[in-house]
Amino acid sequence: MRGLLLRVSVALGLLALWEGLPRIGLVNPNFLPPASEVARTLWKLLVSGELLRHAWVSLDRILLGLAVSILVGVPLGIFMGSWKTFERTLDGPLQAGRQVSAIALFPVFILFFGIGELSKVVIIFWASVWPILLNTTIGVKTVDPVLIRSARSMSARGATLFRKVVLPAAAPAIFTGIRLGAAYAFMVLVAAEMIGANAGLGFLVLNSQEVFKIPEMYAAIVALATFGLGVNKLLYHLERRATVWREAGGT
Amino acid sequence: MQPSIDIRNVSKSYGGGTAPGGLLALDDVSLQVGQGEFLAILGPSGCGKSTLLHVVAGLTPARGEILVQGKKVTGPGLDRGVVFQDYALFPWRTALDNVAFGLEMKKVPRHLRAASAYKYLKMVGLAGFEDRYPAQLSGGMKQRVAIARALAFDPEVLLMDEPFAALDAQTREILQTELLRIWEQTGKTILFVTHAIDEAIYLAQRVVVMTARPGRIKQIVDIDLPWPRVDSDVRSSRPFALLRHRIWELLAGEVEKAQHLASSRDPVPGRSRGGVAADAVAQEVV
Image (cartoon, rainbow over all chains, first blue to last red; front, side):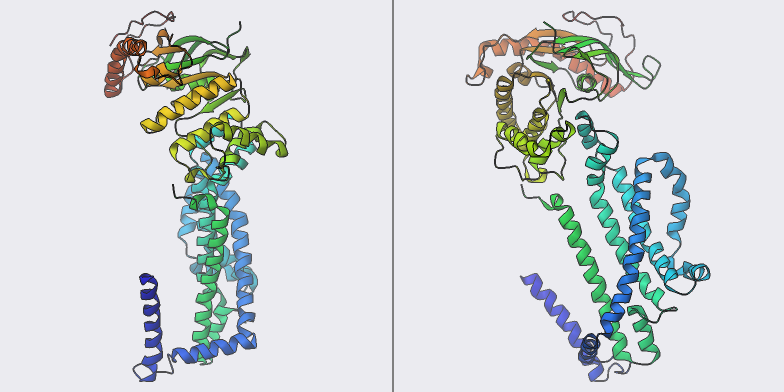
């Protein structure tokens, strides 16, 4: 209770600073409009439907990029986790690839896939596939051998052993990878939408700045943060529902 | 009568067998377990008693031959139910679904599984805990679930690998008594591996004492204590104490050897090969 009180007062204090500093002229209100003005603009954008239109475009890109990441990362991770030779062979190139920032590759993607949607989905894919791949590999690799032995003693093997033991045991790690992947996807989304886009929250941030609609710019940034937080929360709840047995403590 | 479990000249070595650096875990072990018998295998840690159980379970390949109800063991099978020391429950399955695992493997139709699994949960005293996850159960309860799981698919024999070693003393005694009750109720053959002398005497009809590495049968001791042992305080009786002393003497030298082996970490020099009669004292070179 006391912790909650503290957290709320800190948040309110920061908001008060944001409101007060531009008003008393300590910060140029043209560069940082007071919080209330940004809130008003946010409301206006929300009511006019413009914000949702941009959010929808961004969500579309994220979901598509993330879906491709899951479709590639999870099966590949399963392969790498269950087949040592495969993992060792691919380890070098994959470790190298992981180090290459998605932003650095954006010009390359534009070269190959043009300035349209495809290169945006590809950059989101590139950013989000790594944590999914790595977590799946580790999850499959580190399944408790005791569980495998126990299932084998009841004559489980092959595909059955995989479906009934390896996959559920690795599920928490895979979920964590997907949640991390989504967070990375959001980070590169903004960068991707700043080049060659005419819609999306990232576009709204950059475009508002270019036409000097500063309150709109801040409203878009706030929307972006809220949006990312929302998606993370949603994934977190899905993860908890799917792995309810992990939370089941208290003995 | 055909033995329930027939272990014939089983040897197991790790890393190259008799070659230098190899490790002989089991040396020509032969043993028959009768129908419905409760037999305990007792030995110092590292004597290969768990290995022997895993070989019977079909989880570890070895030289020699094992027959269960006259059928040669070639791998794991549902004719044998295994209970492990570390419970080995599937944490994402409820107690009931854990017990039902073997039934799924046995291809029992879905609508029959729950009722059957429930019956065995009830037998181990866990009625009302069907929907609990392993993380919500105490160690003793987890091991009860594991026992129910091994019984649920109705195996011919129950193989138990130090099942109560991780439990506190009181829970252990309660579960030992429960196990005897379940044994009497189901009539299963039980092969029970332990390193606790009291446990072996209290539970078993015969106790197989094993030597330190490489594991051989040192002696088989008949436990002629009266049945049922559950209701009488058999542990504090004079015959119990005498048996305890006799087995302790058999085991003491082996425990010392086992500790010596563990500290030297070298393969045993000068091991003698060839059949060791079940009741003969093995001659060991330290």
